[in-house]
Length: 251
Image 1 (cartoon, rainbow, N blue to C red):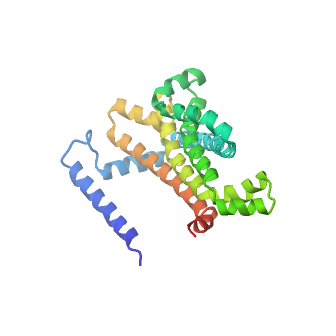
Image 2: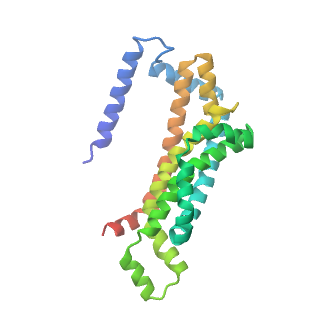
Image 3: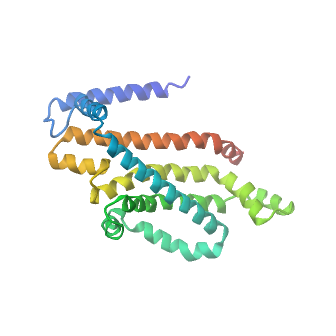
């Protein structure tokens, strides 16, 4: 019997109790108690105060994730298949990722405005590299024996890619997608920090200005739940699509 979930739940309860006891010794401005944060969160959800911000941030995350991951997958396939493109573009891709995204956010807002577009672009840029890197790795490190078998059978390059390289590389690709999902939330919030009047990131800045620490904690909790929900959705599809190929790879 796997008792890890039970121990995890016990640890969670212990952390909440420790937080509650510690918060009672401090000002609510410094560290609000979990009970206070929960009351603020439920009140905001019940009154509808949080919903426009949740929808706005979720939309930015999903659009940025779709755009960045889609481009990362396509470019990763091309660079994995064509060595010339890989040698030509990979140094520039790495250089673009070395620049802190927080430093680029004001520039994107200057180019694309204070609306949703700038946040989607920032999120897409952050999500792009994990999918690109993992897709290139998946394409490059396909089992050599299976590649030789496909050559013997007379498979074309396209058939080898579709029927061997991509299916066998699904575990690597989904691993990159799991990283991208978490980073997508970070990207959207970073964009909202710089310039936004709506969204969970904008609410954090507003709560800081109002010195409303319980509100800030409740928004952080919402962002955590959003990231965890997206991660679990990706994990759900990974178990159904990639796990069979992962078992074959281990064999």
